[in-house]
Image 1 (cartoon, each protein chain N blue to C red):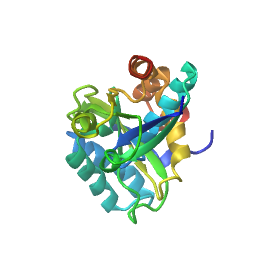
Image 2 (tube, helix red, strand yellow; image 1 turned 135 degrees about the vertical axis):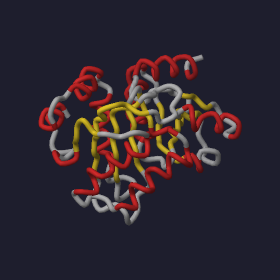
Image 3 (cartoon, helix red, strand yellow; image 1 turned 90 degrees about the vertical axis):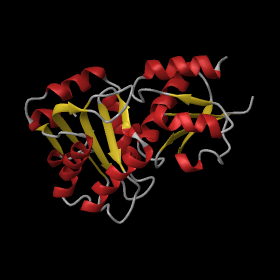
Image 4 (cartoon, chains in turn cyan, yellow; image 1 turned 90 degrees about the horizontal axis):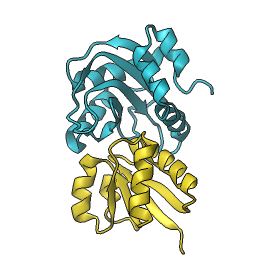
Amino acid sequence: MTNWIRREHVAISVKANNWQEAIQASGNLLLHTGAITEDYIFQMIQSVKENGPYIVIGPGIAMAHARPSEAVREDAISLAVLERSVSFGSEENDPVDLVFSFSAKGSDSHIKLIEQLSHVLLDDDKVTQLRQAESEEELYKII
Amino acid sequence: MAKLKIMTVCGFGLGSSMVLKMNLDGVLKDLGIQADVFTGDVGSAQSTPTDYIFTSKELGKELQQTAGKPVIIIHSFVDKAEIKEKVEAELQA
């Protein structure tokens, strides 16, 4: 399994006081490497405002994303592990401490990335390890 | 019997619905159920011909009123046990 997530796109002990800050922080990881523009982060937050917290796909796990657009430069996934979990307003799966952001240039190009991601998320042991990682290096290795 | 058509739905039809599709594909295969699973966005869910819709609670509540076909709500898209339980309850009834 190679490089479906970049080392620069993972972070631990990320501070966020609410779900907007959590998406912003996770999105910033993609922004810093130029995978997306600032607009995309706005769109990801807007999507939750419009459609509700459906991006919280499992217990404590959010996958923020928006539509493919010019705000996306690269198919990519980031992961911000929050220092303290936040509420997304999801009845079933709050509070959230694993915040993935995911960007796609087209509607098919990213499928491999999602496949790798869901593989990790189905594995409860791995998900626990993600939460416990003590360095970004460790986090990256688990993934 | 014709192959079942199942649509997984999220806001844009490419992120969380894709995760659900992959896990649902796995469950259907384990159970030996033949089905075409495809993703879609919430806007097109009503008008797309399909036998079943799988989605989240947030999106599902409204679709249950409007979709005119069975809408199955999955709480965790990454919990194969839950998906399997609901497939068995709804599709094999």
